[in-house]
Image (cartoon, rainbow, N blue to C red; front, side):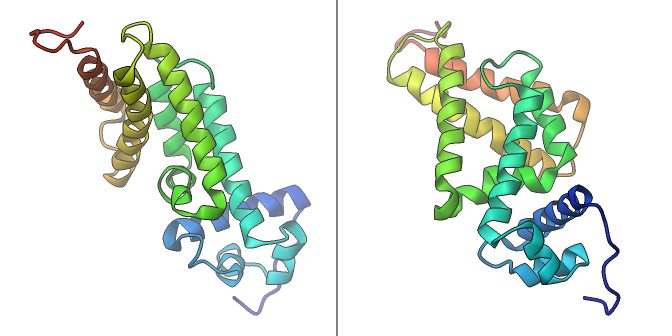
Length: 196
């Protein structure tokens, strides 16, 4: 932290600055290994200024996760996954890669935030199940695909981010092909040569 006191900013602007700095810090070291001093230093403020906006590290982390959920919901929607859902998810991830990774890679490892990640997983599986029920009969393979497709999709987006966001114009098509493969596997008829 420098000896220069932080420039006075309007409250909303300072809060946004803190959230951005905290997102970067948490993405580097995780929730448990990131202290409030690390976040204050990343934001170029004092710990006192940080406490004016957030009561605790947990509140700050949950705010970041909630904000990431809201941004994704705004881009992708929450009740149906149309053809534009994957490109929208890629756009949301590219807009704030650290928040996307925190939400889908790190938060589920933290017991304190498991309620949020479990609710997100359950909601994604419910929407997937509704969409997949049009092509896969009810039963364990529909449930399998409904649980697997959201997980594969978010892991594919994270892998895309981790590898430098290659070919953004074709990335959605490649992820969609993986999803279709899971759907075809779930609909496969034993002893038959083709999926249903």
